[in-house]
Image (cartoon, rainbow over the protein chains, first blue to last red):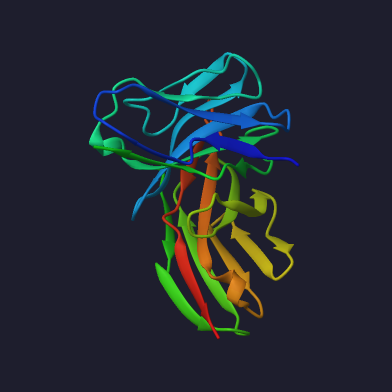
Length: 113
Length: 113
């Protein structure tokens, strides 16, 4: 089954403790991206990757890092999480970025206390 | 500033009725426009994708229209069902040197029996 898998689905952590949210897709898609969704603000793009070893900032990249060492995986790293990063995070992938359907993961609800 | 605005913010309709959701955007340069359906707590699911040259696209009971001159799009839902209760998100892709994804805040649709 074609899918985008995020882990964990839920995470509560403390300020400053490094964490990684994993994202994996099994569709051989070149394009992957991360978003955060906050009430009243909609989804905002954090980082995206056009292909292996190619990443670029989205609209809200501060406080986040990503890597794309292999095509299927695109982890999101929070080196020193802060409470304002409490949010619902989604990973997505598509065959190409511009005109093809994007598939979203189930989401990761992160709480930083 | 690149923006996507959706209206109404929320909408309640009776099962079996039709409805139309609106999306206005100021994104430039424009690559394509997408409508997504997002059930509570789940990742968005793509409904339609339209490029500059496409005026209308259908997906079952969902029909999206695009007027690239006025930078407006609409999503029409025919013969609504209880399962249509969800958030509907308008997304515009901008083909800058890389490219950016700009999300609307969504319209929350409630379909009542």
